Image (cartoon, rainbow, N blue to C red; front, side):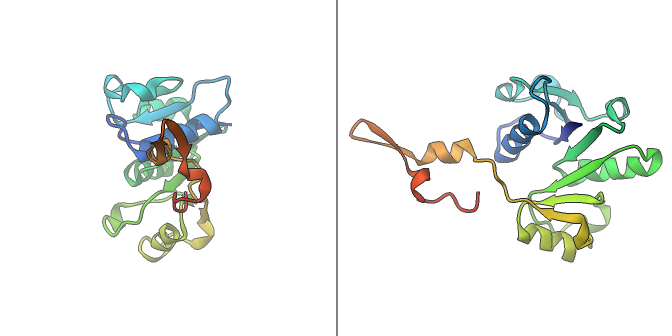
Length: 176
């Protein structure tokens, strides 16, 4: 099974982009370069992200090219997920998973969700149910399990020319 990740913005570096990259690498066969569809022009994709990842435009042509029984589109944005869901009403070939990372209270009637939704917390799940009316049976909560390397690096401190990592001592880190 090939999982194509979809996220609109890779022109800058951020936590959401890091999670999409790490998931793309972890969920795909190590023999193939993971594919990420994006609205960011490929030459503007943050250079550090290009290593080992194939970025392609989020376009009808590429969606049709990759649609089929052995491909799942894993979208991390309400806008791209909504576009995929609407397109799927026409072609009925797409397998779509939406990963909800945040709560929202806007664009209720312009947001469409597939039958498979991953929420990164119970709060996000509650928002999907209460605000967007996504059926609870369609939502699976999977907590963010990928460490944010920038968060870990910020906890590394130097003391008397030695380096210690405070993240392993329970010194913070939240629910990650």
